[in-house]
Image (cartoon, rainbow, N blue to C red; front, top):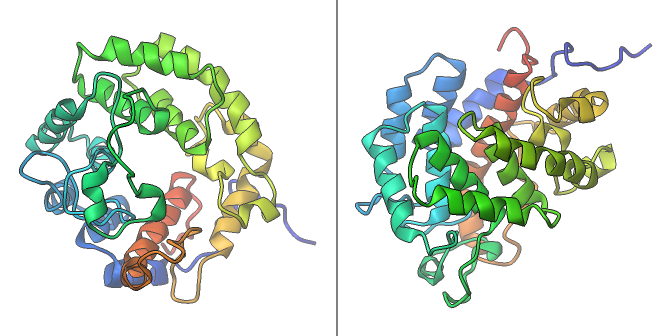
Length: 306
């Protein structure tokens, strides 16, 4: 008789093979982040590796977001950098202060543009093509809600934050799509986010998660939100909502590990820049492998040998 899966059943993954793939195919930043998360590695080494993606203007580029290869600073890549700096508890470092200053300079009065036509200079995923820069400024939850979370965490742009909070609350009046939902979740999960804003966000998180998160194996085989994308630990406000399927989802993810120890992305660039896609695929697989291992670690599901 098969033992039912639960959050105490270790996942069946080859940790050593996954580690080898990250160390051999990943970027220096990915290697240092693996070392930090799994081998008591140095926070300073992560920050040093991240610094190589920062431009003189304070923003980040140089392919830090793998789907956007431009060297130029972008809001997209800078938010990725700030996520890492938050994890490192490093929002007061010169690296972070430069990024926040650059974001301040890019504020358009309503929010931020993730990418601009400047970023079309280098290979990128089709969804990061910027047609022009004439769109009317507006608050866009993806990723303005996430940026707002960074501003609270760093206590930055205090003058602009009340306006951004009002815009965030107003945007909650329409159902978010999946990427917007993730940004609102990051805003909710940020410790420094005001309680009244969290209270406004929570009902939308609960309602939209029910609608957007796929809860069957057939759904998990397609691109989309899965329970483990939103529930990062048992303290999550969404844990009770997906408790019955969370273990199954985590073990499903484990089952997708490939023979070389890695995981492959659920997306591609299609017919755009096919040669570049093949060149960067090892880096993206290393990122996906690190993401999956981190997910299992948060629930203490990695085999004891790992």
